Length: 222
Image 1 (cartoon, one colour):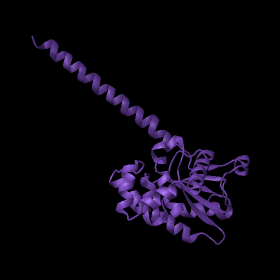
Image 2 (tube, rainbow, N blue to C red):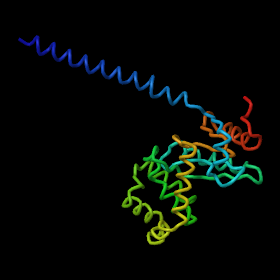
Image 3 (cartoon, rainbow, N blue to C red):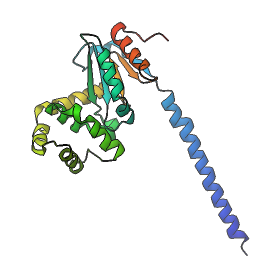
Image 4 (cartoon, rainbow, N blue to C red):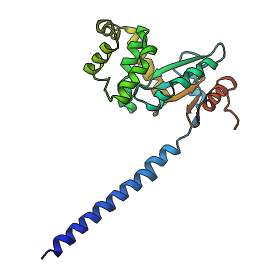
């Protein structure tokens, strides 16, 4: 009397388990392996370098996001990297702003507006904390305004700055750089307009690698 329902239940559970195993295997072998095999250093073609939208020479440009965990934990390391950079060179921080990275890019107007207001660096840690730890969507205007108020930032001043040509220009610049270099991960470092570097080792070794590219136009010998 109970054999058929029991067999049906066992069959259903077997199908569910097999499906789960197949899905897990696909994820590990196809999705994760793609990330592992992603190139850590890419040389940009001469044509793309000549047409680069990056305005400054002798630069390391970090493309980051407030929603990037690795960007957040690297803040102290990036500060130490900047302190080591030789005279005549510059570190530039740009927030990712392209369609492919829409979730992370949604925070770029906040970065651009705070940058134009001249107060972005002192509020960066709070922005990381809100997005990564408190899971607050600062791309949402209501959430953003609450965060601004909590951080003592005048809403009227913020709203006025957000409508300025300077903010529009910075947003467009970040989009152009993100698109030109086909940025699909953060943090990504663009060195001297001609190298695209993803972190493949710990600091300070990775800082040595970036500085070698900046000063000698070649990767650090292993």
